[in-house]
Length: 434
Image (cartoon, rainbow, N blue to C red; front, side):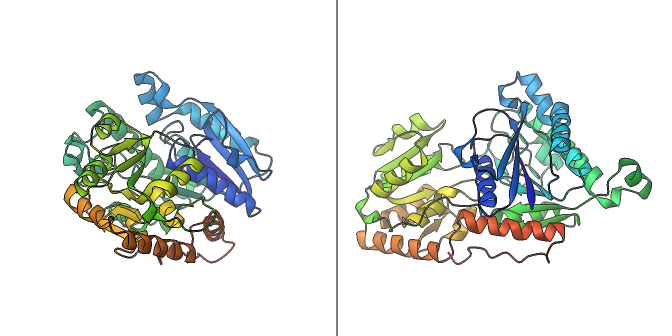
């Protein structure tokens, strides 16, 4: 089998690229030929150094690095991206059996969707966020600091000042949404295509296989695309790149840890405030706009970004628990899964996909993203015996059905087999026992 993976970058600038790169490696190690097509050129992640992986850069520019007016236009519809992708696919020495799109908002834009449709190849799209159905991508009211309750692109949605940056940014994202759905319905919906048009355009519409990374995010998206027959839904866990090792001893740690970007929607401020209220130090690995605010909270320590191996070592040494109390409906934060794999208790928001992997009171806690509720959970971490028991149970449960790169690649191969007709549509074996 030959799989074409498409994403914005060949380095992990975010979760989407990280998963795209790791899935490319996992598939290659399974013997699948992989062509990774990335919009922006530059250094590639060492994970892509494998004889089974071919890299093709399109030489595009990140829209965030463009002047605002040009970035807006290219973000909505980048004609050059479409042209270059079409040429790249045509130039491949062997035709892929399936295409898998991971992210398109930073360089590729919705303009690539007609190109993918005209290829005639089965297409999968992993939804790492909610941009398919929501203008700001996270289904969250930044103006109110709470999850959105409006129907996407209703009149009230369009009028809401919900974008994290400005109304102008929201207007651009709304325009991108309409461009995206115009392309999807025109080129993938068989109901909008007659025989003459199929013959003229030279391809027949195919369904799109949407890959969700948690049951919660799948349910959220399905609410808004219910009844669209050419969208097929699947759930495949993101991979966790941790080798099995002896469980950590979280009772020897001193702090509640937060790993990632320090933003209000991710709940970084909640961790600092709740840990202080519970009488525990807090440790922040990463960076973001709340960094100075976090440093001002007594007991909070900010250490900046670290390499993955350093993060693991630091958590094993310092963390009594890892917390991800997202205010938004986070799809599936990897930090929680990595904590469980290391044998460290995890505390997640009841709004996040990560909560599905925690057995409340057994491997960690699932709680509302509020200071009071978190402080109560953090307070329980002062009990060494409980922390040690939670960590041991987390390690055992995680490794009974691990979300390894090999398991991820196996699920993808099952998906591709169903898409290409090489097998019956699979029933995925997910790590639901956590």
